[in-house]
Amino acid sequence: MRVAEHLNEALHALLDADPAVHVLGEDIVDPYGGAFKITKGLSTKHGSRVISTPLSEGGIVGVGAGLALAGDRAIVEIMFGDFAALAFDQLLNFASKSTTMYGRRVPIPLIVRCPTGGRRGYGPTHSQSLQKHFIGIPGLDLYELSPFHDAHALLATMFARQNPCVLFEDKVLYTRRICRDGVVDDLFRFELVGGWARVYADGDLPPDCVLIAPGGLTDRALEAMRDLLIDHEITCVLLVPERLYPLDPAPVMQVLRGAGTIVVAEDGSAGGTWGAEVSRLLHPELWASLSGPIRLVSAADSIIPTAAHLEREVLVQADTIRRAVLA
Amino acid sequence: MIGAIQERVRALTPVADADLGRMLRIRHFERALLRLFERGQLNGTTHTCLGQEHVPVAVSGLLDPDDYVFSNHRGHGHFLARHDEPHALLAEIMGRAGAVCNGVGGSQHVYHERFLSTGVQGESLPVAVGVALRLKRVTPGRLACAYIGDGTWGEGSVYEALNMAQLWRAPLLVVVEHNRIAQSTPTTAQLSGSIAGRAAGFGVLHHRIESVDVNVIRAELAPLAAVVRSEFRPVVAEIAVHRAGPHSKGDDTRTPEELREAAEGDWHPRYAEAFPEQFARLDEEQRAFIARMVDDVLIRPASEWERP
Ligand SMILES: Cc1ncc(C[n+]2csc(CCOP(=O)(O)OP(=O)(O)O)c2C)c(N)n1
Ligand SMILES: [Mg+2]
Image: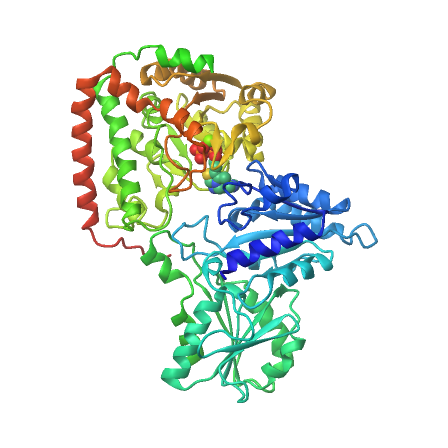
């Protein structure tokens, strides 16, 4: 099953299970079913709880926050994650703050879904990975879809925290297969530990390198790991957290302590990155066991060009990760 | 509906070769894009203006080279009506040498002389107000023209811009291509009230044009553009059009009836019927021109861009 279908199934199940759940977004109702078809079938089955909206990103995130404030649970799809910028005020100054700024805990069960990332030639305003811009906002939790984490459980986890959440969903990942029963492919296996997926080729040896990356990087990270193993006999473990912020490294600390080299990869542009935040958390803990500073891989400090040959130069490729490990 | 029927039976006025030729040039350009997509020769996405080509051709006839044009995702016609540079635009869309923006911006992000497009709906309107204010100060009589769709009236920036434009007397001509749909959502499901009513709320002049006749559209727009230029005030010109093609590529979920209606509202078969000889001659000319243009661009090397 593809990641897109799996997420669609999880949304169906959520709407089935809980009459308080509402889904809003541009062009999400049938027969169109959303720009990336993640909401396909939802409106046919759940009618008025699945709403196609005007082009009003700021407005619909505000409406979602209002539904959530008053006792419903809301999922808002931003057609292209880039346009979450238009909803930034609602997230920063209302939804996230409201959980605490009234002097008591106010639950806001709101999920803002953001199809994210490039590699599809959509150009500078339809290809960005904006995770880093949402980091460090008190009361706002950031998650990312991966092929390893079960989407049903992920949605449940996000709602359970009663905080507004942004869920980043890599657009190319939608087309990839989900991984189940601990199997990735002929070479790699995985296990889930406290919200993290640990992906490895050989479970016993301490790896030469630990790679930390959000779910959207999975295909490129695995390709790099395969090359490194086969061509260079370098073993890597990949760690994929479901929650990017606030990050809880405790469940994987053991794995991290065993690695001299740590590389953090992400799709956002260079500067002020998620990787910098991960390093901030890990450096004090791991200073003694590291062979050098944590290495950061990101897209270039650049807009994302439209033409494929130019886009490729800017975005993270498997080779970018491979070279960072070999450096 | 009655208006639509009346419109269909009303005869088209004789059309200049230059106008019909440009409308057909844009049509062939857009068709060529869809063909290139089908053959897997085009990367990414694109939004064609099939059915709406006559609007920018009518508008561009009223523009001065010093006017600014702000365009959106469906901007190929806006560009080609103002700048007869299809090679440079196709090269942009295909990332080939000679591209207007080195292949960086692609279909939706073009900046050429005083033409600028961007892919975030509504974003350009406040920018157009700023540009218009400078034009008024520096070269009075020049205007900023911004094309937007009906669906873009969902964005708050549209209202902030209209308010400021009227308040500060910005020479801004907003051309609304009202094709009654936004991506897959009919206007009736995303717009309450009317565009006329919304403009009225800000005291902004509004005029709606129902015709597909390029001369009629231009004639109705001409006094509006003159008001914008001489009185320094914004005008919203709403033009009824039909989107004859998909939103981008292969994503049309309209019913057969809706598609038939859209096809009936298309200027293309009506001009073919009204002016068969002129149409056939110009159509063949433009078909051949665009075919040569595509061949020329296809053999070009990849565009180069020096990353800042
Ligand atoms: C801020 C923003 N939201 C959503 C989109 C995605 N999108 C591109 S075009 C479009 C529909 C626009 O409809 P309309 O304004 O009527 O123009 P039309 O496509 O009909 O020409 C949508 C939703 C976008 N580009 N920008
Ligand atoms: Mg429209």
